Length: 448
Image (cartoon, rainbow, N blue to C red; front, top):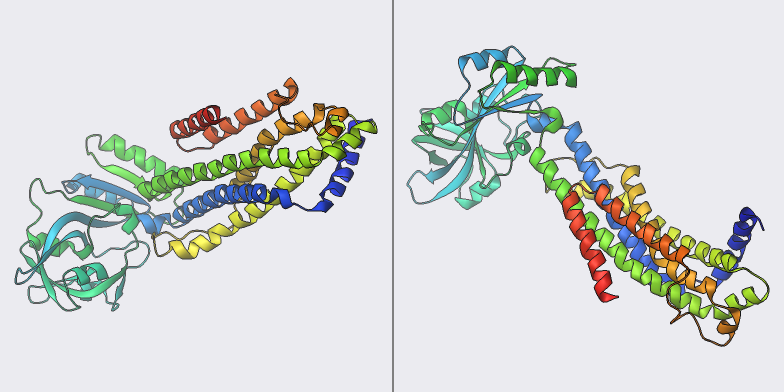
């Protein structure tokens, strides 16, 4: 019988066999669906955040380019170079202790001093909304400042109260609601205290050896492409080989955040793959139990002249259809995760997740689900293929018959190796993924 006709007939018999329901495959379905949903959803969310970082790169970075110098300000020559590129905004970051005027309490703060051009992109939002002069300007020797609710609560302060930073006095004139380029400054260990560069100079904290980060953010003329930005980086390295500045561009606005997202995504992908592999054990057990309940049907097939290959095809098609149902459920759940996460993550990270459909992430999840199903279903199906009808009629079943013929054993092993290779290939950290794959193989060998 031609292969196409055999498969068509096997598909018809499979549909008839499945009329009895899926009662023996509910755990199998749940494991496949959850594993696929975890892998597809986590990677979709990660790509949504990455897309958000790329689309908001200028606002997150605070410019098209960011030049950072540690423990020193830019020289006159460096100022001239930066000014020739476009509009420049200078900010200085340092940690210090903010004290109440009477010295009764103090708190560590991440002081950020900004100039009049800040911000080049995005908007600095405060409550109440004030102009930069109203917010940071000097009044009778007292400079203005803005801080988040955390600092107000920690020092039991309100808008209009004062505190000291170094030798300068600052009035908290507003609560800080949104700092557009906060993520580009990296992780902070304390509440933000936003002040002016004049206020920082008056504090007396800038001394030789002070741990201060000076960031010079540049807004390039409209329409400047990535090639021009790369040329500017090369020119800066050539003209100032010993400047020691680090340069970031709008396409790499938040490397620390991107790295953490990638690491988080990899970890949860491995968790999802673990769920799939554990589900694979359930697949093997479910297939074995299902075939054991179909001994009479299989024996009848063989007694009527059906080949072992036809029996194998009938039940393989059934398993694949059930797996396809679980994979589709998982893909639907995974596709919805970026939309659900976009609302939740806005209160956790300062990056908008671009809710959308990410076929690459979902396709990878579906592929993993299919490979796990095949890897664990081929061996019990191969055993059922080779059991004689007489043994089935005598209720001998499939147990205790060892491995199936080498073709099925080799196919199952090959699919398992392909699954391991893809898990390593798709991973951001292949070393960690290799350890995971090795540990999984070791666990199966020990517990088998």
